[in-house]
Amino acid sequence: MKPRPDQRRAARPRRIARLALAVALARVTSGCDAVSTPTLELWAAGREGEVVSELMPEFEARHPGLRVHVQPLPFLGAHEKLLTAVVGESAPDLAPLGNTWLPEFAMIGALDPLDDAVARSAVIRSADYFEGVWSTNLYEGRQYGVPWYVDTRLLFYRRDLLREAGFEAPPSDWAGWLAMLEALARRFAARGENDKTPIYLRLDEPELLIALAQQTGEPLLRDGLRYGNFRGPGFRRALEFYVNMFRAGLAPQHGMTQIGNLWDEFARGNFIFYVSGPWQLGELERRLPPELADSWATAPLPGATGPGSSLALGSSLVVFSGSKRKAAAWSLIEYLSEPAVQRRFYELTGDLPPRRETWTDERLTSDRNVAAFRAQLERMEPTAPVPEWERIQKEVAIISERAARGALGIEQALAELDARADRILEKRRWILERSSAAAGAQEVTR
Image 1 (cartoon, helix red, strand yellow):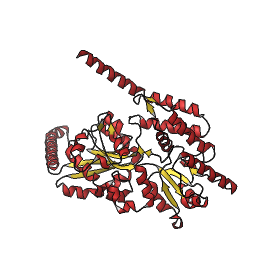
Image 2 (image 1 turned 60 degrees about the vertical axis):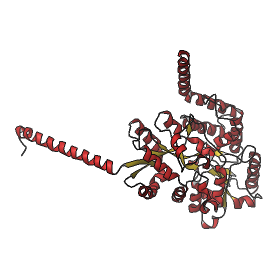
Image 3 (image 1 turned 90 degrees about the vertical axis):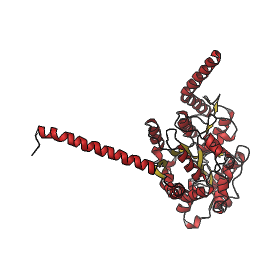
Image 4 (image 1 turned 180 degrees about the vertical axis):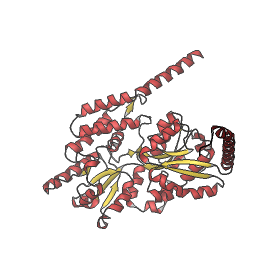
């Protein structure tokens, strides 16, 4: 039986009173919890977000009463999730950011500058970090992050097949590398192995091309990072070298979706070289048959005229400007930056440590394939420190693929890349011009 309207009206004040009491009690309880057990919010994407919580018990033991809540994020959605949280003023206290993301978040004021904290720190010493990855944390002269792990690209190759062809190891420069690839192609042709190529390169990944271009010493953006510099001599030379590998039949003209299984094809010897990052170390150990365990090796990238640089990629720890626990967040960054903690993190993830001191551990120095990465980390170059870089990099992938397939000539590709980069950077130019004009007006009024 339903209550009469007058009964409902009589009951409403009691319900409201009970609800108000419940809300008040919840607030009191929540406030007590916040005071007694403050909680740091750490968001982390991918495999790192899944395992970093294993490092938290020691940190919490050092800081009684402080707790860390780790929120794992799906890697593909992490950028959007963090950006949305910043806009909605619900960002975590700290998080690792991809190095190419950092300029964007710094530009919009989402990050707390860390210059003073780094200068005071007894744990973090900038000179101990690999220079290339440390510099990715600088934006417009200020420090916004501390490297957590470093990523780069180098050569993976079948050393047994290379020896069969009469070569002991990859060369250190482009000319020697090209000569080796051409000799391997002739060997395949002479044996009727027309389905094999000396190298496999993913057309949808522009990292190798960008690394080759940066080896020439020419910047990819010019005039204060306002315009593309793809028609400059540096990128032109790199694009010609890169595209020639496809047009000469040294690399197949297809992307990742057109290859059945990278590791199976590598095991069959359908290509001898490919370019990738440190996660491949674990993948090859797991996926290759036992009899091929000692058949492969790694080597730093050949350079334009000698040992070459590669890209300084990876992830860095940042503190968000809206955090109410910045001091505690910084103490967690210091903890995660300790060499002993970085070694444990390496064991959990295989991510390369960004500090030289961490690399003195025998577990890192005794592995010959890891040693090639250690050598490459001394020769890394950061990408352009502009928020628009990831968009520009996507255009590099699109245009270079069309050039590799013969749909665009070299001159057309270079002109198109400059045009697309200039359109992407249009807003940046407008902001910089207005800032310059405003600064000039203030100077006149003084």
